[in-house]
Length: 596
Image 1 (tube, rainbow, N blue to C red):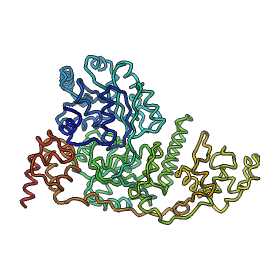
Image 2 (cartoon, rainbow, N blue to C red):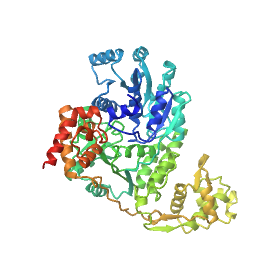
Image 3 (cartoon, rainbow, N blue to C red):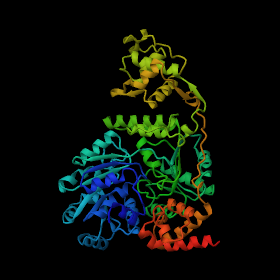
Image 4 (cartoon, rainbow, N blue to C red):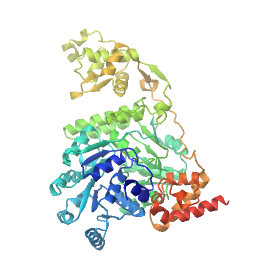
């Protein structure tokens, strides 16, 4: 079979998504590569499909057992020979998998980095016909990343042990610094670097200043997502448990999940969530990377995340099936103070300085009134248009806006007249006419901008500076020195104006949210009947429901109501293998619905 035939037969798709075919072709040409593509963009298919077209086995290095397990289950459901080697198996099971590998009976083998570095396992791999290696969640390689793992760093040995092997690395997020760290550490040879757009068009991003403990805001949000699956992220283990209990008292099927729970409890909660037995998991960040559940409709953060990378990864777990999903970020100044307190206790290193800048970045993002998708893209050095209707700021662009052009020009002028050589707090002190000795020593009390900003508090000037940072009008250089960019020069010359939400210059006010309804274009009753059948089949086969068919597939089925095999194979996500296993049963239900 060729690429398209393989795509249809095993995965039930007629066309590739953006960048997928480019990656597949690179792997088939034995070229090292790094792909940066948001969660839900279809990274897994990029290495699973070429494995089917090449002789030998593909070794996939993945960070979490749960993630590997879900991938293997999904591949087997598609008729693809896959296995994982981990501590979850008995010695007898591991021996059997090794025998299958020697007999070329497995196409994709999933392992953790710890096992890959084991001498016995490395020797075993040398005897196999390996077509290429995959490093999944490759940002874990980088010490500058948000989920650095020591054993991932050791993957630098791969090219030493397998100098001629192709390595394909995949991640959803990577700043330029992290990207270079991945490429250097893995010693990729003339790698192809492919970056997908960071815009998740099905994801609506909202943020609100948290009121008290945020529970009332959480309930208001959940009322718009009744009977839908979602994750609520909390800061501490205790907060996950108290919030989950509170939601239970309000009638929600919610459970807590954190690293301190017994393994059997964590496994039960994870299994119940994947099987749709519970709707909500209230979790610390210990719950996340291992989730391959496609029909998560919302993600809520009860506190400010540590970094924008963390935040983007976590909200990316919603809407992986391509249907509409919503996120809510609740935050307060207390969150920022708490995070900075933890960082202060770290040793004085470049990583400490980096951590401070990351918390400042996520703080600016939360408080901002610019397009949130655009801000995320800018952080990762991507350029996109404003989303228009997929974030709270674009949905309500003119709400309580005030013009601050003249004040922005005063701040920009102060940065320029202090030779763009000082930190922001110093510049604001000049504007506010501070008598600090350093200002007098530098003779900056003689500048025309000295004391012209007494009408605002320091906090208000910092808000204006944050707005200018969001607009890419100013930037932060070495030693936290602020300097003007081209857009800042335009504002200073008077060719551009600047507006800001009134709440950012005063007491924060709650923002309104656009109500999302992902059932708005198909019959809910038919979907529910199809979903009940899916759950029954999943229970009988001991696999997660979304592995049978995704919500997107059920949605299309409810719209098209196919009556033949040929019509059913036209539906997204249904290939020959899936039809042979489940098609007849679903056709029978559709016929029953049609006959009323």
